[in-house]
Length: 132
Image (spheres, rainbow, N blue to C red):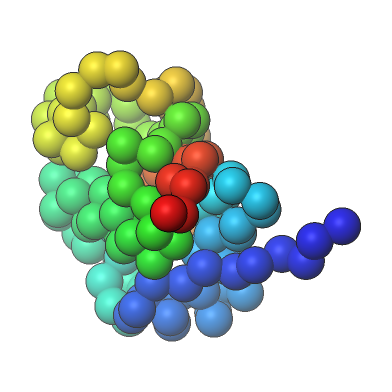
C-alpha cells in the first residue's frame, strides 16, 4: 500500500498546523482535498460572506494547483453552508464563476450549524491529469 502523499499550497500554513491536517492527499491519480474555507493567511475567517466564499474557492484553486490540477479535474464536490437559504444566491454567483461550463462535477450541498467560525466550506475529489 502506498503512503499518503500530502499536498500543501504556499501560504495558509497556520490553519493546517493549528488543526493538524493536510490540505490534500494524493492517492494514485486521485486527489482528496480537505474542506477549504474562506480564511485569511493567519487562518482567521473573512467576515464578509461573499468574500469568504470567494476566498474558499481561491484556496481550493491553490490546493488544486499545488497538485498540478485545476477545477476542470474535479469530479465530486461537497459544500457546507451554515444558512443555505439566505446564502444560496451569493454562493451560487461565486460558484458559477469558478466551475465554468458543463459538464459540471457531481455536487452535494449540506446545511450545517457549525463550521469553526466559518459560514462556508468546500471539499472536492479530483482525478489528476496524466503527466506527459
